[in-house]
Image (cartoon, rainbow, N blue to C red):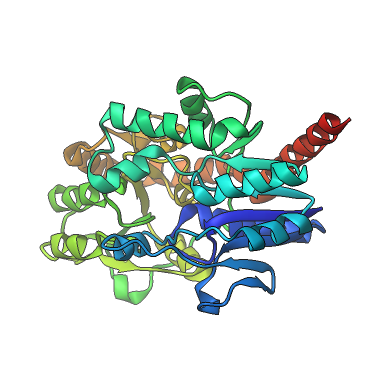
Amino acid sequence: MKILFALDTYRTNNNGTSISAQRFAEVLRKHGHEVRILATDERYGKQTGLHEDTYVLREIKIPIFNDLIHKHGFRFAKIDKKIIREAVEWADVVHCFMPFLLTRAVKRETDRQGKPCTAAFHIQPENITSSINMGKIKPVTSFVYELWWQIIYRKFAHIHCPSKFMADQLRQHGYKGTLYPISNGIDPSFTYRKKPKDPQWGDKFLVIMTGRLANEKRQDILLHAADISIYRDRIQLIFAGKGPELKKYQRMGAQLPNPPVFGYYNREELQDLLSQADLYVHTSDMESEAIGCIEGFAMGLVPVISDSKLSATGQFALDKRSLFHEGDPHDLAATMDYWLSHTKERHEMEKEYAAFAGQYQLEESVKQFEQMLNNQIEETKRSKK
């Protein structure tokens, strides 16, 4: 198949949706499909049109908020009907990743050309409303769900959701059509692996969390928990990610005996850290899946996860010992202390979690995704008869 991915931002290492698109594209190509991208691409400056595998769109500059948007690893695409038309003409099927104006414009063009088109629901409304400190105000988030349904998703018959939790959320908010709860999947190189700690870590407990440094991810809870842990002097926090809250968290972490390490790591560097770590923590209040958490326990780390009702990540806890009360640093500290104190139990559960991760392999996710595309293609053919 010739598959077109349409999403505002594709080439970034700090946006879960974009990273998922990159990984799916890589595997789809290995399966023999052609994949092209319709997105902004800063590599080409002001150039637009087809470059290599990308139909490049200009970025919409939003005064005042532009820097904040970039810190979240995002760019909004400017609608260019000519480029969109060329991209859709090339494709056998189109998949749209984001609930913004580009998806709406692409769907109009696929309808005009009679091309099959599917959508994804990766971005929770809470991710948006949290940026303005309104993430837990239900009327506000419900309004966003309804808005996205009316202007985007009601036009699609087949929608990919990265978790059953997210599919349930859509049904609760009145979304119709066929919903496909397909994990974003992890690369097969994330597998059980242990190595001795590098000398720089000494006898410290390495506690790691991956993801954007943003309000809704609640890294502040982990910083507080480390400060009140019985292992305060031995805990070394590692935050693998970038984001708008970096400076704030650096200031918070400066009071700890071992100041946290912040940084972006490529796949090999991240795996090296995970193979040395003692515990993975995921504090996010809102999450549609959290691939970083799966990668962590696939490598043999026991996860400690927020039990937030707005997060899908709690589904990965094999028992209550891996859950802490949402937003409660004291309960998080107690949970971390338990696992760090019970080494034998931790090592036993590490193997169970690594085995559990087998069902979230990227290859299997892409196969399910291909089936969704084929279902849409067949439905589009029938509608033409």
